[in-house]
Image (cartoon, rainbow, N blue to C red):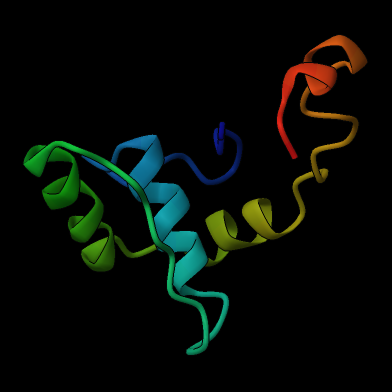
Length: 82
């Protein structure tokens, strides 16, 4: 997620932390669950709670164009056991 424009990433925040920080602003009923096998990543993700996004950053993130299209093409979907 590239949030560069009028609102750059918060200083020292990783893109993942920025994304998690944004998710945390979406409401008290939102609880992002990120999967990882590394303690360092858990610590990084937990640190997102202390990332403060400016009004400009929140505006930019809230107005991103949603992803569109299929995640996998037909050939790959045929190989996925649903």
